[in-house]
Amino acid sequence: MSVIAAKELRIIGFLCNWCSYGGADTAGVSRFKQPTDLRIIRVPCSGRVDPLFVVKALLNGADGVLVSGCHPRDCHYSDGNFYARRRLEMLKRLLPFIGIDERRFHYTWISASEGARWQQVITDFTKQIHKLGPLSTKTEVMVES
Amino acid sequence: MSLEKLKETVAKVFHEVDVVIGYKQGFDPLHATPCFITMPEQVDQLIWNPLCVQNLTSYLPFLKKKVGIVVKGCDSRTIIQYMQEGLIKRDNIVIVGLPCTGIISVKKVLHEIDNQPVESITFRDGSNVVVKTVKGQKILSLSDVCPDKCSTCQYPTPLIYDHLIGEPIKSDKPPESVYEDIREFEKKPLKERLEYWEKEFDRCIRCYACRNACPMCICQDSCIAETRDPHWMSQKLSITEKFMFHMIHAVHLAGRCVECGECERVCPMGIPVNKLKKKINLEMKELFGYEPGVNLEDKPPMYTFNVEERKIEEHKL
Image (cartoon, chains in turn purple, blue):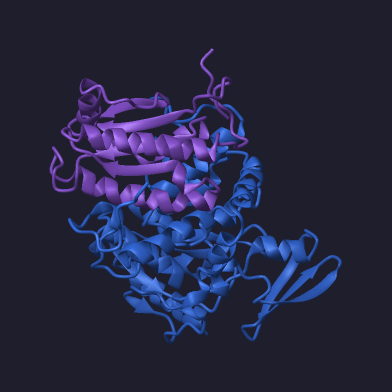
């Protein structure tokens, strides 16, 4: 389920501090137009992203989750995103098994200079989630009261 | 015959270790229970038959002693997995291996005899079980009352042992049969799958028996399902929390689950909890060619990485 107005859906983005968060910032500074459905959570590294963060978000009302980190070999901590890649790939393959469309979860690599690429990714991903519609499970939505 | 040899071997092993863990008769003829042998006269309590269902290796990471342990083929994978993860030292354990032709599922037997109290149980020529209750006796085929893991067992003989009781046996089950149920389930439409899990997890009473019995759940009392900081889950009795708990269990066992089936055996609500872990194992095999608890030299896939992943491709939007 999603916000009542239903125009916007809930998309959570876990962005690594060193690349993707900077990339999103670059897009902002360059005044690239972006959809507004995304809520960004800044994490120190994509290796910080426990696959359970994604599960928790999806079960508690998010309609889509995006994880983005530095390109492989470019990790600020040298190997965080290599671990992340294995974990997130595992999750990507597990989600359809529990009945959640794997397209609701996407992970990618965006560097701090790729503002244009960030705009492309977030626009396409938001479009994809809107096409899928709100995620309806029997699980409760965490509503801020 | 093999029981005599087991007792003989355990009596010998007993002198090298502080405690030997085996099986003894439980509170009724249908149940076996773990038995901690610390005195020589206790060796006579040992039993070995298809009632010996528990995975005794679960005790190993918590015992700071030298331990002798009785293992079946499936349990031996746990030991290898522990060693891969550096949780136990090989020098501290003496393994008594038992080639196993299959165990029973107590739940299935009780279902067959309408939950009547069992007076006696005997095993006939390795394929039949004769169960006597107040209502008379019933002959059951071992293949009908075995747990699911036995019907696709690939490792009837322990993969690691110091003493082997009897001759090693080879599996006669095709390797592709192991994940047949998973592939079958994946053919269902997405919505049906979600409904299936919502229905199954709705029964969960969050007793955490699956976690407590799981040999690979080594965090035990520090489990994030119960901590307040970080507060992963609330105490609320809702499907959200139940679903989340089972996802925690599955994801924390990614590339580690040895498919001993303890979680499913102990579940009082009969939830197929092992299915999620089997699915992850199937993917691990496909992605990294890794099977938990089989080769000592392997490294669990989530503990390592390759700079170039051969099987992982970048996803396009």
